[in-house]
Image (cartoon, rainbow, N blue to C red):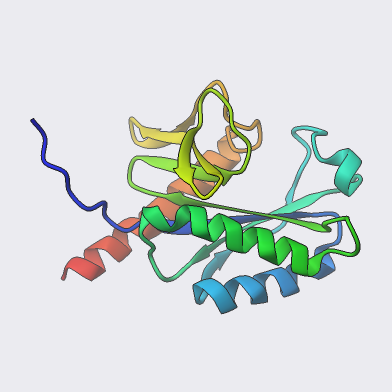
Length: 177
């Protein structure tokens, strides 16, 4: 029989997706107010692997991934998802959200994304939030699953999250010394 243990802290990541990049400064400021200093903000990444959000956000979408200096307890992810939903609402103009703000985390073994949408490959985490293991760290790199979003499964994103994992690994070493 195994022994239940507290999970080690993980690296919070947030994906910002918008057609109005001028709103990214506001979104990042709201995130920093709630989750502390951002320690990485990627360059803008074109969102061109799918047209899923085109009806809601239009064309020419850009994504930015941000990570935070402070590690979090993975149990906090449902509450963080609710807070990022609040940020979306605070930036909204009427019924339309101009920025999609989606949290997740990187651990040594996986990239997990939070969602409010249930599906066969997602586990219920509480508070109306599900978790999806989007990438698995295997054989020295992140690898996608058949259900991984096409952009997250790309070589570019897998390498990006590999670099985030390396930063996270060094943070874990720092907290242990």
